[in-house]
Image (tube, rainbow, N blue to C red; front, side, top):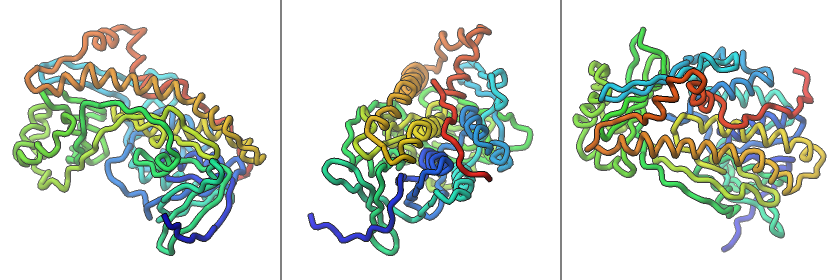
Length: 413
């Protein structure tokens, strides 16, 4: 295949493909530690709807450790301290974040584009940080089996950036992961999700609510003046549901959330309903010489618990903790990259196992339209025992082995 001539536009210590939560934070932390970083973002802005918008206590703690939490919480947001699960058969359980051992005893609901704009503006205060928008990564530079940077395309044409380390943080459809040809295993989540919005009335409960019916589940996320709603459907059923029509869709919503009767008519066409094809996978090796994958590029998470964004943040924090010193010294090696995987892999696999258990024990039975929904007795029993009831919310809030910021700041701001 003929190679298109490219211009080498720059050389940096670390090139990051993708400016989602993982890419933005690892870029911020490395630049803060004095490492020259360029982050390449495919789009001109961050305005993609129905992305992960739940900022959990562990992420707020990380922001607090670098002095950003107070400014971040000045952004418009809602605070959710409870998660409830209710079935159409009358069963109901609730989990509270109010007893967590942290000053952030809530999930902050913030549009992801606001989070990313905030983080990249803070990172831009460092002379070592550069964000390039409208820069679509098209491949990796490889010399003698070592990744030496990336190729990307913008309005001016094709370019190359050379770097001792390339971090792939370009999401579940990662171009860099595919180019690096890293081994992967995949799971088979039983559901997909249709996302839409409905207005929220003043005085309605501030919570994350999961409503379960026969063959259908709804998750209601409080977003100030509207509910962001996840309509959980059997895997691959989206086309069948669309064929049945909007009237049937709105009627099905009301079977599990009758209080939405006065607003389901706000769904006027299918353009308002977005499909999330649920995937779950992970790389068995996150790295090769000169390249590291983190976040969804290393492990696509199920939406169960809304923890994906926070797992990505944990990856970024651990990567910066381990890599800032060898990057600053110009001595980065594959063993350093392997250390990042070792630091994070157990946590990722544990959370994916937790999500898989929820999917198999709660969601998959619920998706059988011929059976009434029922909550597992084990979960109901755990939430009745004081010494055990905080375990599920702790897992959602903190994950497993959450990292703390250890990379330094070389800037006086």
